[in-house]
Length: 134
Image (cartoon, rainbow, N blue to C red):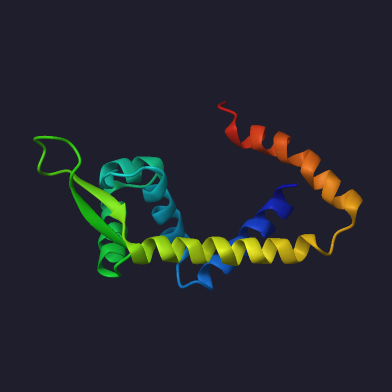
């Protein structure tokens, strides 16, 4: 199962790149969308990377126009800056989602009804597997 999941993940990352975003760009933009107002330290923790590394990515994404600073995240702490997706960042994420969805839909149409049913039956256990906390 692991090799197949890796192949699927790689293909979906390739689809994201067709939209002009690297896999890490997509990942960070998604994290900002899911955690509005998060700062660099919070994003670094969420994405399990060092704060300096996240800071480099955030500066690059901001220079590209995909994210913007949304003011101070915590009252009184002027060092902490909340981040938000720009309109361009939201559009880029939407393009990634469309590209990935189109790729997946095109493949699913090639499967038999029994294969589709088997995939549907696997969704809940796979979701549980991902969410388990060891």
